[in-house]
Image 1: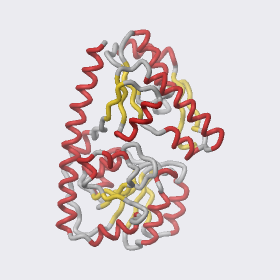
Image 2: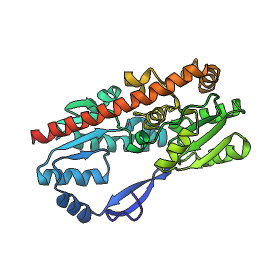
Image 3: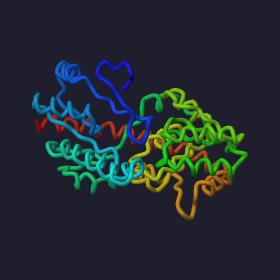
Image 4: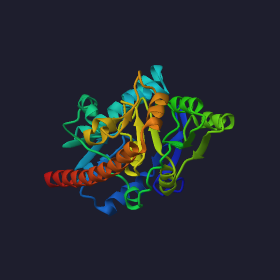
Length: 320
């Protein structure tokens, strides 16, 4: 939400991460907007204050809801708060998700690995669904991948769970390769400090979608070595632009078989630097094939995902 969002009453920084905010909505304003919109179904993507109001309105208007489990809140709570505070915050998220899941006929999850979490929180029928790509990633003509690997891009939140330290370590180990960081987060200052220290590191700040596409097209590799990644939209976006993508095995995108075979994956035996060296040594014909196939499969999966979303929405609406 933007600061001038008419639905927002006020916001305050998230405990443990000042770069993220909790938004408190104006109840009457948001309530009226939902009533005027006259939805047939309400999708609840996050268990926050906006979601609670939407849940209340769905009950009042007697329309079905479709909650989506996006995050492993227990792991996130331990990352950012730990101890007793982390325990309390996790319990709050679990309680909120239970409120969302109990009255729902279908709960959506981002990958099959989250099935156990959703069941634990009281979800009934659970369906795994992908994330469709934004139109801009598909519409802009593809830029062929360069013959030589010159630039690596990280795009996402600059946060501990994204393993920014591993990307910075690779930049130090590979001084002839440029490393660009797009995003914001609690580790922003660290990246900016390293930018001053090393000639091959550049901090780009938070990018709009068109700017991100430009930066992807100007890179050969996208890295997302997160220790906690429900899906990994940035990786999917990178594939759609025909870039070579490296992820950690924890990324939910690796559970999608069609995509997984085109991804390079880190491991304890193969850290990020080693995989980057491996990719640099590959013949251009091999990289070109991965690039073309990645773009093709991500477009195919987006079409299938949109069709699946429409099918589920129609199914839930008809149950009402």
